[in-house]
Amino acid sequence: MANYNVRRRLALRRSGIHGKGVFAREAIPAGTRLIEYTGERITQREGDRRYPWIESIPYHTLLFTIEDDLVVDGGVRGNMSRYINHSCDPNCESVIEDRRIYIDSIRDILPGEEITFDYQMIIQGRHTAAEKRRFPCRCGAAGCRGTMLKKKR
Image (cartoon, rainbow, N blue to C red):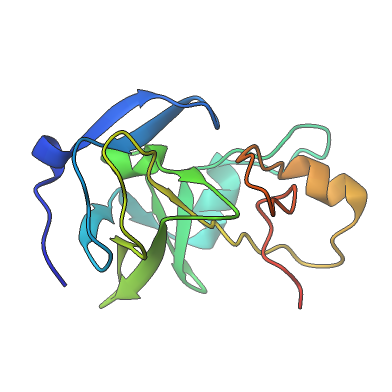
């Protein structure tokens, strides 16, 4: 896996998907480790306290689960990786190694292309229409499933 010079090769810009996004400044080959997802390491309980579950509000969080009770809050001491948006047809994937989170390219990425990965968010219970609306996907991919939730099957 090739290492990547983040500051020289990635840029933070306004995204057509959602808010800000991370973009390639130059061509990125498949199999490249782009960036580590960094932030404060906290318990799931602390994450729930920081980002309470309010039924009527679309869910937004910068938490990334490593293990059952270990999450990284990218909103506290995080880097630009917290701005990588979800896509149902991503060009990258998240990889957990030694309790650290990395973003690796899964295909060649063109200069100017937005960096994305599938968040595969998990909730307890059924994926009702209401739950899917709480986790909307705005990726615009041809096969968009309309939600950031991980497929049940």
